[in-house]
Image (cartoon, rainbow over all chains, first blue to last red; front, side, top):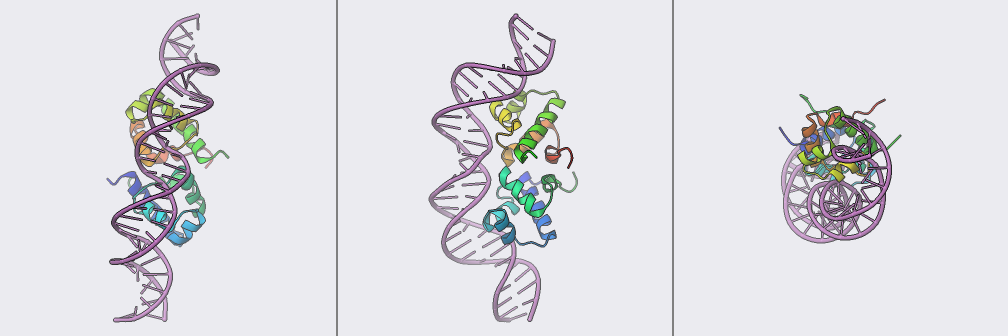
Length: 72
Length: 72
DNA sequence: GCTAAAAACGAAGTTATACTTGGTTTTCTA
DNA sequence: TAGAAAACCAAGTATAACTTCGTTTTTAGC
């Protein structure tokens, strides 16, 4: 099984694309760079709690949805 | 509404006590200090992804359960 | 196929904050 | 009422999140 960062990143990417917004737009609205969003989605690193909160707010979803992975 | 760190901390404390384990035991098993666990539960800071994973593993629960807050 | 937008990717440096250490105080519980 | 458990505080360290800059690849529309 992939690690948490990777699972989270894949989940974020899915939820973001479902909302039809680009990494650039998400980055701008969450006060992050597009690189950071890219790194998070690729599982390079996980966001800090403050940014986790911001990202969920931009996507207009509850944080827990970002941790809901298939098969669990 | 309390911020994410605080909500998370309260949720962690509840799940930990329900399992009947002490901060000290959780700290030891997750390679953190008792102070860090205390700080996390009080909402002083949120754990990094690696530690989030470890904590959930020690509690034998899915990570998403730590983000399930009442009323949501 | 061409183009442009979107995203992947890499390296190297900065910075925020998680985490520790050490100690004291308070709360809970047996 | 004693001891365990946890709160609390300050100050220092460590690490991983985050940035910057630049290049390459993928994707989607014309």
